[in-house]
Length: 249
Image (cartoon, rainbow, N blue to C red; front, side, top):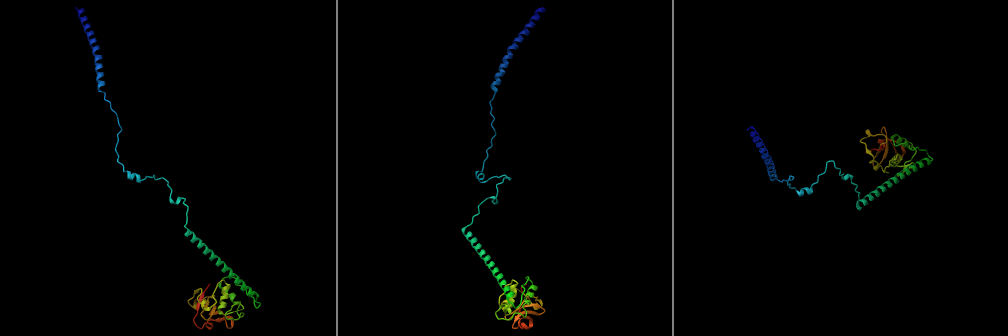
């Protein structure tokens, strides 16, 4: 009896095993088919944003980096051109300047020649020897003028050591100092700088009016050429009326 029970149990176990073996593959196949039916195909697209652009603004604007070097106007090698009118004006100005320089040079040469000729006349006069001034100072002027005192006669219209009038004497002395003066006492009363009064006068100043001209030497005295020749005289004697005081040095 017991043997029969054991056989039944074994038979039951074997049947259960066979049943399980047949169900499992079927279940797996069913699951696999369900999985295949559930697969969904999907695609991933990049996200896009629609941007509106201002075409006119983009076409008219330019961005330049702050450290960019585009140069400047001063670095451009642009040839400088001048109009024909500008060229003509420059040529005319250059011609005028050249003419002015030539005239100045000619005048300087003429003055130098005049002084040289005058000094030659002095040294060859035979009556007395004159030492030319050694500088453009007041003391040199007075020393030079003093050499003619009592030696040169009065000659109306003259302006050389052979004979001179009042303004001719003043003109000659200052001329040897390199100063050109007119040969007329009234004109000499306007040259140089005006001095207010005799109290302010200094040796070397010119004292002149329409009738007479002289050189002030100080202490109310002048050196001049008058009818008695070249000499020293008090101002009151040779200028009884008003006069001008003019300073050159």
